Structure formats: structure tokens, C-alpha cells
Length: 233
Ligand SMILES: NC(=O)c1ccc[n+]([C@@H]2O[C@H](COP(=O)([O-])OP(=O)(O)OC[C@H]3O[C@@H](n4cnc5c(N)ncnc54)[C@H](OP(=O)(O)O)[C@@H]3O)[C@@H](O)[C@H]2O)c1
Image (tube, rainbow, N blue to C red; front, top):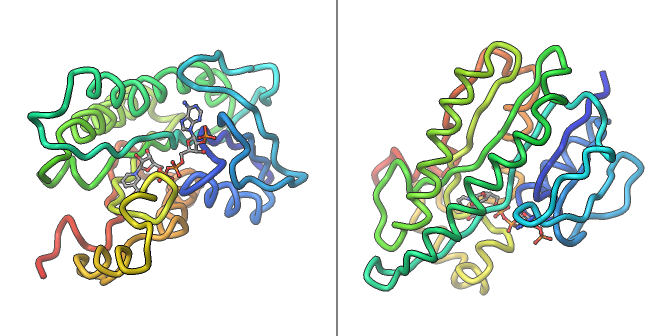
């Protein structure tokens, strides 16, 4: 059956890879982002230009029934705690948590129109495992994990809500950390699975969590992190 998915932040990185995997399965995908980024023209893709923090989602451009929503915008600002200003915490909270809240509230009715639908959020490995310089992003993503479990309880059984906690993945967001082959190799060597993540690694789990194949999974935060959160080296 052809389904309708909304990917907020599907123009680059993990979101783009999800869009590609969903259209390859013949689903319709509505993508919201500020620019088209690396998104190619495709008969199954509708791009909607919007800044999720500033603009209302144009609901008239979306189908009445949505089978899944993924919220992909996020941030990586790594700084020692002493130089992290409160404004940085607020900024990270806005894009990681409040943008997701706003998106879910805008289309919840559309998601509830489907017999069963899914919401996918993104955390980080740095919530479950303490890492220096991650205070702001870990605090914001910790809130995303709380939202995941709370909404999963509130929206069950019709709407499932899950979250992926990735580690370092080669996307524009992580561009500064992986800007040369040497940086990528050095970073990869720190993982039990000996490489950094590729967008497809995370997107494959994202598509699974939105699909009926995962219809008995809700309220989970799933690590996709090259073994970093649980394996010692
Ligand atoms: N990459 C990593 O190493 C890593 C690690 C841990 C967790 N994560 C999490 O995984 C998720 C996906 O990350 P990613 O690496 O794929 O990021 P990315 O490549 O930067 O993609 C982010 C997407 O969100 C869109 N976006 C950003 N701000 C927006 C706004 N205000 N309004 C509308 N769209 C907006 C971007 O498009 P425009 O710029 O055109 O708007 C883009 O399509 C994030 O939540 C991130 O925190 C990533």
C-alpha cells in the first residue's frame, strides 16, 4: 500500500536518506526544510519551503492522512560548560525539542486519520553516555527522549512514537568534525565497529520504525552508534 510520510528536514543527511528509502518503496513523501538542499526532483516528493521555528506548517499542502512523521532538524555545538551561554541552551532546546513539538501538534490529526501511524524523533548517544562538551545538546536531546516516552503513552495504540540515538554520522551537520578523510578515519577508529555512521545506517532504522514492520514497538530510544554506547574497546 502506498503511504504518505512527512519528513521535516529531509533535504540533507539522515532525513534525505529516509526520503530516498521511502520513495524507493513507492511511498509519497512531503519534505519540509528551509532550502531544497540535496533533494532531487522526483514525482513522489513534494518539497515545502518553511523554517519550522518561524513559519506555520502549510497544512493545505499536506494530505489529510499521514502514516508517518520524522523530525530531523538538530544541532551539534560542542563547548566546555564554562563557555556555554544560556542562549545556547535555549537555541538547542528550540531546534531539537520545540520544533518537534510544533511539528507534531500541527499534523497530529493527520496522523490519527491513519489506522496506524508513527512518529520518529532523534536524540544522541550523548544522552545515555556522559561525554564532555555535550552539556547543551545532551540536555536538549534528553528532553526529546522524555517527549518520546510520554507521547508514546498518550497516543497509543494508534500512533507509535520512537526515537533514534545516533552517534557521529557523516552528514552536513557533522561537517566540521569530518571535513577531511584523516578526520573521518581518526573519528572512525574510536568506534567498536571502526567507522563513523553513514546517513543510510540511521535512515534504515528510521524507515523501519515508521513502517508496520515495527508495529509492536513504541516509546523506545534505539541506539544506532557503531557500538559506542555499550561496547568497550
Ligand atoms: N550527524 C550526526 O553526527 C548526528 C549525531 C547525533 C544525532 N544526530 C541527530 O540526527 C538528526 C538528523 O541530523 P543530520 O545529521 O541528518 O542533520 P542535517 O544533515 O543538518 O539535516 C538537517 C535537516 O533539517 C533541516 N532543517 C534545519 N533547520 C531547520 C529549520 N529551522 N526549519 C526547517 N528545516 C530545518 C535541514 O535543511 P535546511 O537547512 O535546508 O532547512 C536539513 O534538511 C538531528 O536531530 C541530529 O541532532 C546527528
